[in-house]
Amino acid sequence: MSQAVLPGMRERRSGAIVNVSSIAGRVAIAGHGHYSAVKHALEAASEALAQEVQAFGIRVVIIEPGVVVTPIFDKAKRFADPASPYAVHVHRLLLFYRMQMKMPSQPLDVARAIHDAVTAPEARLRHLVGEDARRLVAGRERLTDEEYVATGRPMPDDEYLDLMRQRYGFSW
Image (cartoon, helix red, strand yellow):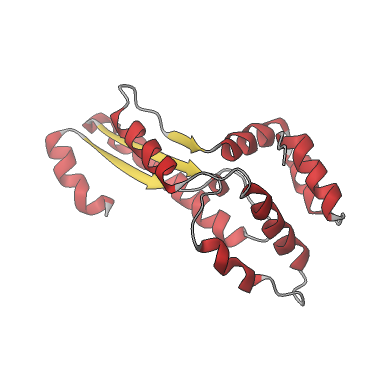
């Protein structure tokens, strides 16, 4: 789509490319590595494109929602294969999403973020959507890579949720 619209935008010397990513584009999630990888790639491509088209007056923005209420969560249960050697990670992922559904964003929040991003007087590349997204990014920035990876160690659900509260300030 970007390739299709960029010639006209370059000619007009204005425009906006909006890529809707996810908080998973900044914080990789065990049990959901494929999703995080795709979102990381989208963010890298968007970041490079932003540099390439800036001189043409074209703005590129990345929208990074946390948990948004959509039907996707009804489908998620089918991926929880208890025989998988990684079942603990999928279980935690679903537990985390279930907890996040206590403070989710709505699709309208994402739409507002897109509107605000393309109409703001000053261009900004990344736009977080939702309190959970803000907390995850801030918490991840305070951790070393080794501390973050250690979340994958075996622990009971209540210990895992306590760790999420401590690291990210969640109050579910």
